[in-house]
Amino acid sequence: MSADVLVRNNIPNEKQGRVWGIIGILSQLGFIVSYSLAGFLADRVFNPLLVEGGALASTVGSYIGVGPGREFSA
Image (tube, rainbow, N blue to C red; front, side, top):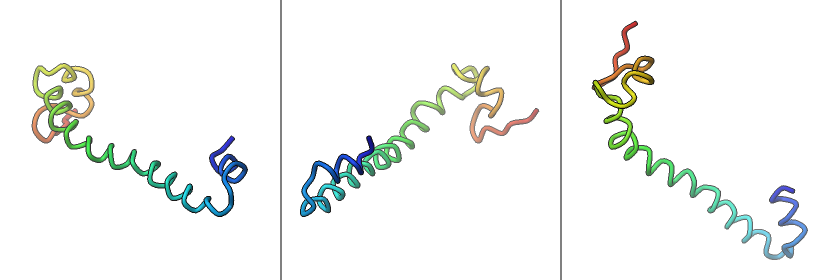
């Protein structure tokens, strides 16, 4: 069942606006968390793995390049 059916059947009509507001906020929290973590993961996790000799240099690095700027040359 979808959230739409559950809310419409189980929540009184007078409170559905508030419930949809809460559902909207909760569903957007994922975007906030992911955007907040993206920079940290890029700088502190993936960049060190993609330097010369890093753990991903021979696998992923062979496709996207290694080092600063990751300029790939085939």
